[in-house]
Image (cartoon, rainbow, N blue to C red; front, side, top):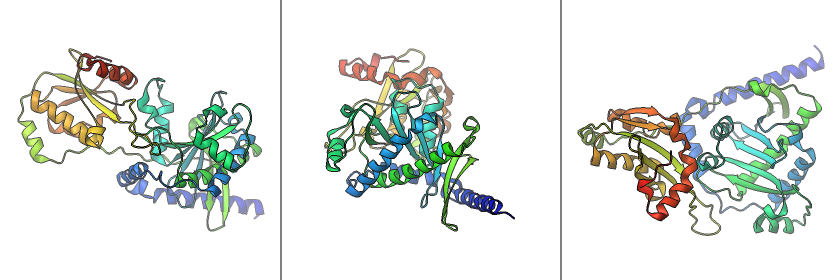
Length: 393
């Protein structure tokens, strides 16, 4: 048996073990629990833990390496490199920005939930005015832009490190994106992940370019970089990753007394529409806090047009509670509608349990999918007192 054969055998054994570890993680064993834990981690700010000087040095060092490597010349924005990092039981997905000579940078998507959000944005034709998808992203981005794109905080870090950058698309800066929040500066935990992800992305990209890997990205293949603790070695290979698990938990109505009372309400012929969007009024208690984007849920009259009622998570803290209150308020006042239309399956998950328990028919209507991009119009209507007469789909 040749040494080359031994190397291939060791790599295959390591890959099999790596995949076994993925399947044995909570994302596959208990995906709902994993999803809820991921959402709790997303909502935990961590912004009070600033990036250390040592971390900033490492971040800018690897940023300079990536700028020299110019991975956007080798990878299209739809072509993903996948990392299995020690200490993480879900993959980290890396995409490049810049193949279209627009925005240059690297996107880091930590785990299945963030990967699903990315794919939802890239696989669907998203209107640039539709904020709902943009504010649903969960990733850390390294950008290479112009000096005037940087905030004062970015410039101060560069100055403290005695770094110099000149020219267009040469100034690196980092931003964190979390669902329901404005893009913000990274914190210490995010910096730690970013360093490990970018360092290993660099090695995987070099292997992809130098070894001439043939990767069928369109059919689900990826360049995978993973670590094997038994051999203390990193491997780079081309694989088709296991299907990523994802379950978006539905809102469950557990108040049996409430459901019993609402089921007694008369059944009407009303056909309603239901949609959710972010509204462009960020909430920020102080300048150092990550600004939160409130979400608005609305009920619309699908026959006559117009918005019947609305609510936001700013009023109730949690969007699920706000939606339940919204639907309950309608039924108590107008009775049970004949149907409620939603723009897509994901949105339907918010009201599916409520509708089923009250015998309300649920349908999908593509007209409602445009609701996200008219939030600015809605805010204008609110300001002029015309919201109740506004029909934007």
